[in-house]
Amino acid sequence: MAEDPFVEEQELDFWGKSRMEGSTPGGSAEKPLSVGELTRMVRGLLEAGFPQVWVEGEISNLRSPSSGHAYFTLKDEKAVIQVVLFRSDAARLPIRLREGAAVVVRGRLTVFEARGQYQVVATDVQARGEGALLERLEALKKKLAAEGLFDAARKRRLPLFPERVGLVTSLKGAVIQDFLRILERRAPGLEILVRDVPVQGAQAAKAIAAAIRAFNDPPSVDVLVIARGGGSLEDLWPFNEELVARALADCRLPTVSAVGHETDFTIADLAADLRAPTPSAAAELIARDWSDWRGEVAQLARRAERAVARMLEISRERLVRVAGNPFFCEPSRMILRWQQMLDEQEEALDRSLRRALSLKRERWESLVRHWRAVRCEEQIRRLSERVGQWAARLASLSPESTLGRGYAIAFDDHGRILRAARSDLIGKEVRLRLASGRLDVCVLRLVAEETRAGEKADSENV
Amino acid sequence: MAKTETEKGPTFEEAFRNLQEIVSRMESGDLALEELLERYEEGMRLVKICSDKLSLAEQKISILAQGAAGGESTASEFRGGGADESAAH
Image 1 (cartoon, rainbow over the protein chains, first blue to last red):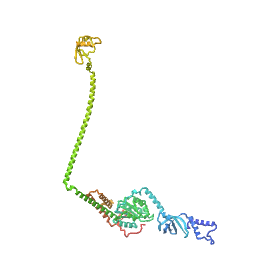
Image 2 (cartoon, one colour):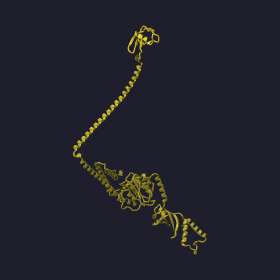
Image 3 (cartoon, rainbow over the protein chains, first blue to last red):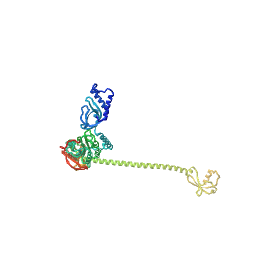
Image 4 (cartoon, rainbow over the protein chains, first blue to last red):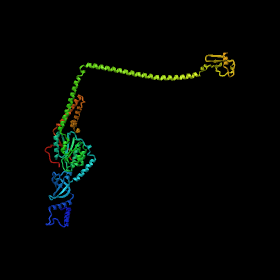
């Protein structure tokens, strides 16, 4: 502590302040301080001087009583300091406290007066070096998520029944033992192909990615598991590397990530098709217990047998019914009856065809007749009307009708109609045409206008 | 997976799904007796395939070593029992 110039300044200040008060508490044998007073003064000093500190060291003597608070000693090669972490802060911690872990504690200094012990009241504990790692992890997670590498749509379905399982892990770990034991119990006939890789350290990510790609090309297993036991964030780091995430995303085989404990989440967990909380859980997730399968297969076999039995039963019943049919008793009678029915049907068909045909023909003919009649009558009516008109007109123009009224027409000997009385006609013959018959008469004399009918009659008499 | 198992006939999963389908079809009741019996025989063949696979009792474990270039060298046998029990870190 004495090395810290800041602390020394505080100490000087304290003594300075006390001196200014005039009566130095505990400054003489006559006026001693009580232990409580001194401790309270020390506490005030420490709390004012160290409202917030970060201190790194290794956890030891960790105690977590039922109160939920956590107590431990932070130590390095030279010194130790007590740390207390109250329940509400302990619950918020991103890491699990464990003995021997190298951590950075943030908190304030205080004195636990009852013991005269100074201590750090921690508000946060991070694994040493984790801050930077966590930042990188978040950045990579964001980047890959933006690329859609973790999309649910990319996830492949695990096979119902894998026959060959690929495992990428370290042969040195306990992981493989648990994994194989569980599979041996659940799915004893599985073929398991293991690629031994380092699962921590600088070369791990590269080796893991290469192993994944080797399983994928050519696809040599039904499902691929990458597994590692628990460890610190730093230990698990290879499974947070982009290289591994990309190998998983590119892998066409269904992949399962089983890294660390239930509480550990890695980028590999997000990139794989399925995250198993632990390697042992992965073994259970990939293979259903074969005794269940045996049960299912047996049940299907039973169902098939029942289906056949039911069908046979139905067929037998049908046979019995059919055997009782009159056809089998007197087949010839049945055939005769059917023949008769057939003949009847045929006749009926013939009849109805004929009826339909004659009906059609009749209708057609009457239509034709009707049509013709309508056309002729109309024509005749119109023509005879016109004939009548013309006859009437003709009649009115005919000389016959004029003669009928008592007129006569006179012709000279050339047959020309006489319209004027001319002297040269005297002594000549003139022909008269009457309504009925003709007269040849001789012209006696020319009479001035107003000739009498009698004179005419005279001449007629000649 | 079909790709890796073609020379050995259907995979368990193929055989099982096929069997499920056949049994459902048989139970539908719209098969003629003869066809039903054909399906039954086919179904029993699949039951045998599935049962045979399920009766395998020996775990086959191969360790595929990786060369420096990521290439494969020979597979070696690995038995679970006596190997190193220490944790991976």
